[in-house]
Length: 297
Ligand code: NAD
Ligand code: KPL
Image 1 (cartoon, rainbow, N blue to C red):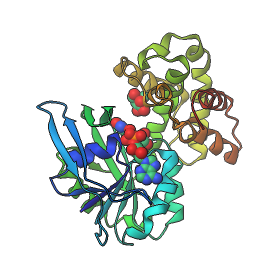
Image 2: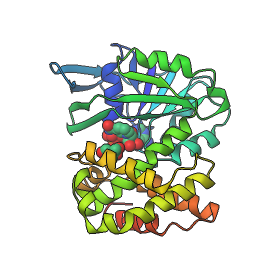
Image 3: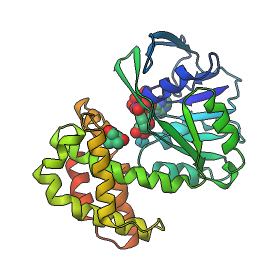
Image 4: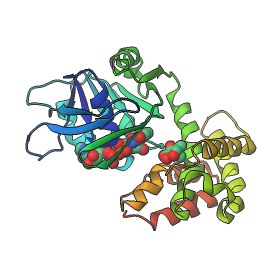
């Protein structure tokens, strides 16, 4: 049985794709054990289907837990349900950005904590409709020593979904690569209220992107990541912005819906790491503050 904490877009995608009867949602504490969660699932291709997911029952013991809350909710959400998760059960974190994964690994260093990064795209245009907007790939790897032994098993359990899975021994490095792209696209799209591709021709982007990439390159190197030239980082950011030119980024979508964004775990994380490592990050600071003013905090 695979427990899913966070019955939002990504959690519902995994629940819909895992073999019927395997997924259960973990309720928030105090949430009365109500009826099963039902929704319509619109796959990338093929007809819509109806999905029904039960809640974890009293006495049920999940043998894998996927955490699909937003980064800012993750530590509190897990703290509330940790007593229901056996100590040997792998806990796989799906959050964007960095900081929340390390916080969980530091809180429970003896548990098998894993992290994932995924390019699957899922959204909920209506509360009872889950759209798998784009097929992608998912990489999973260990965040604690205890997770080294369980990555293979967790990957094969998830591969039963038919989604593309890879094991990644150095998951932190892959999370940094994703962070670079999110730090260079998401805040601009939120501040400028435009799709990803449009940022490239704006004054704000053109005036600040080189400074941002210098900060990214310096913080990454000081944090022990492979040294990468600022120009290379800029190319990576612009490649993704062009390939996803018409997309609304997750950060812009959060602002448009009046939700808290993940800025504190993207550019905000870079500001915090910069402070610890003695590296000035004025562009990340400016972008973080501007996005914080756009959404509830
Ligand atoms: P979402 O807001 O749709 O889902 C999060 C869910 O967590 C919500 O249903 C919310 O009610 C629930 N939640 C919040 N606090 C909780 C608590 N204490 N206990 C139980 N549930 C709680 O967000 P999402 O789009 O599914 O994204 C989840 C994470 O995955 C984010 O970090 C996001 O960046 C990342 N991600 C999402 C996608 C995607 O396509 N949606 C792709 C890649 C990465
Ligand atoms: O991951 C993304 C996001 O929106 O969070 C990008 C790569 C920017 C695609 O929209």
